[in-house]
Image 1 (cartoon, rainbow, N blue to C red):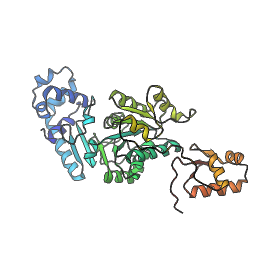
Image 2 (image 1 turned 120 degrees about the vertical axis):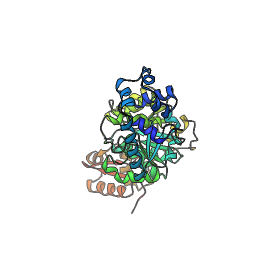
Image 3 (image 1 turned 135 degrees about the horizontal axis):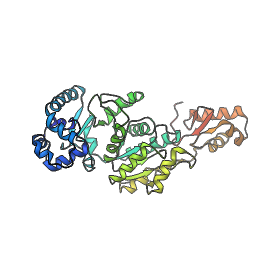
Image 4 (image 1 turned 180 degrees about the vertical axis):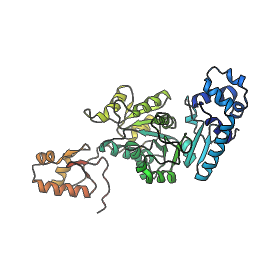
Length: 371
């Protein structure tokens, strides 16, 4: 088996990308044979660009020194490096056209070989999307599926949180080095995933989260998973790129329907038109993947709990999409002060959420009351 140093030397060679490196492995058989190849042998590879050839032939010492530094930094940071031929390297990821030659892992590397589902969606997600993503992730994680996402704000964050809330496992795929927490608002979540899941990246330590890295990161999210669930996406978004990458990789694509007048649901509806499976709950996904499903799964719109008449009336008027207080007053035909009291009481019971602009919504999954 090749050494981590040899793989790192190749991964850190200027001009040598994952797809080209895979072709070199197919041609020469191993990392050490690639490094030992002569200039003439390498030049005979018609797929090798001039800058890649120059990097392999003229910058061997520079790449080797960079590999030394990387190994030392990873050891100090408690980061595990998995090479393409490592027994722990995820087999599903190996099947894609351009698998990363190196994966940096913080947490439990064995999770990368476990069956999992990717969940992706908009950063600027609606409250409906966030609730559904967290609930669905919780449900799937409860059936021993690893939830994989990209650690971005919005749907990604909700998916990671849902998996952790179920006591399940989650993988965060980063678009930067593992020694950088991005976005910074998710620092606590970063720590939780490192303790109860895995944080991974193909990028060397110290790599900043530049925009062009995220589309490449997305192929790893889909490549690790049995299928990809799209919760919310605009018609032109990085989320749809991930979905189409998943299709190219032979993965199943699932989509959550939303309101027909919501731009955040346009991408999901387009995917459904193109053949993605419409998802109401986790059972739909488990059934499609031929995994065991519960006899009955909770609906996205649960029935109203037993409530006193006035509270039940107000609760029945609410939806998971926000509704303005004026609409509620007009529909309820009760005094405004009484409606405010009822809404507060429902909120304290974890049944309703108040939002900016005097808007209220029923929660897709009621929270247990803390009072």
